Amino acid sequence: MTVTLENVKPLIGSVVRFDDRAELFTEDAMALFREAMETRTVLVFPEVDFSDEEQLRFTDMFGARVNLTSDSVSEKAKEEDVYQVTLDRKVNKAPEYVLGTFFWHMDGLTVDMPPPAATLLSCRRASADGGQTEFSSTYAAYDYLPDDDKALVENLKATHSVRASLRPIADIIPPEDEAKMNIGIVKDHPIVWRRANGRASLVIGTTTDRVEGMEIVHGRALLTRLLEWAVQPDFVYRHYWKKGDFVIWDNCGAMHRVIPYDWESGRMMHRTSIAGTEAVGA
Ligand code: OGA
Ligand code: MN
Image 1 (cartoon, rainbow, N blue to C red):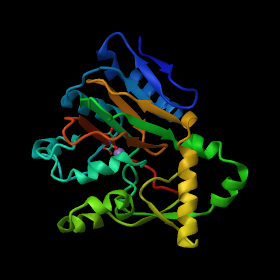
Image 2: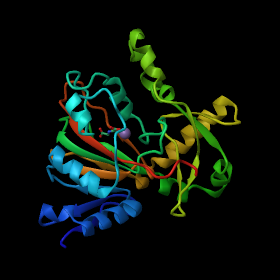
Image 3: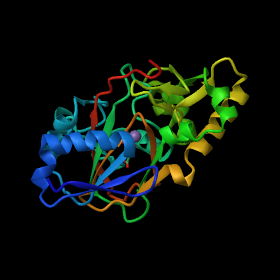
Image 4: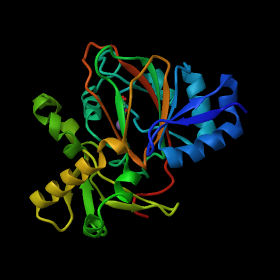
C-alpha cells in the first residue's frame, strides 16, 4: 500500500498521500484512516474529486452512515444521505442554518442521538473569498488546560440548544422564520467528556447556553473563556479548499467553523456523517 500520512501541525491535521485512488477504498487504508483520525483529528485528501457515489462508498467503508438532516436538502440528495452545504437558496431551503456554521461548533449536539463520530466533506465548488474551514482539537484543549481550570470544569454540565447557536444571527432572521429557532432539543452535556478510549475532551461551542448551577452570566463567561482557550493557534488547523478536496474529521474530538463567504459565492460542499457510538459523558 502506498497510502501514507504527512502531519500538518504537531497537534492536529494530516494530509493523505497516495499513488492510486483505488487504494483509498481498501480495508487496510480504512484501518489507517480510523487510527489516524483518533490521533490527528483531521485528515485531508487533496483534490481527490469524489463523486457522491464514491463519497458514499468511502463513508460506508469507514463506518455506519447516518443522516443528520432529514429536510432542507433536495429530495435526491436526501435519498442519498448527502447533505449539500450551501447558501444557494435554490438548493437549500433553510440557508440560515448554514450561517450557523460560521461559529465554532460540533455537529449533532442538539439531536436525540449520540453526536456523529465523523463528518466527511467534499468541496464541489470553493468560494473565491472566505469559505476556509477551521478545526480545533478539543482533546488538546482539555489536555493542555491549566490544572485549576481542569478542576473547575471537572463536574460541570452545560446546556446546549439550537436557539443558543442561532443567537449571533437572531436579529437577522425574519420574524416569520422565528419558529425555526426552536428546532432541535435542549440538551445538557458535561463540559468534560471522558471517552471510552481513556482520553478526555471538551464539549463546548456555539450551542452552549448556560452552565448548570452557575449564575447565568458567570456560566457564559466561563464558556467564552474555555472557547477562547480551545481555539488557540496550536490547537487549530485551517483548511484552504480546492475543488475536489475531501476532508474527514473526528466530530467528537473537534470543533469546526467556516470563515464567512458570500450568498453569491457559489460555494458547494457535499457532507456525509458517520453515526456516533458514544453518548456525551457516558
Ligand atoms: C456543517 C459544517 C463546514 C463547511 O455542514 O455542519 O460545519 O466547511 N460545514 O461548510
Ligand atoms: Mn458543522
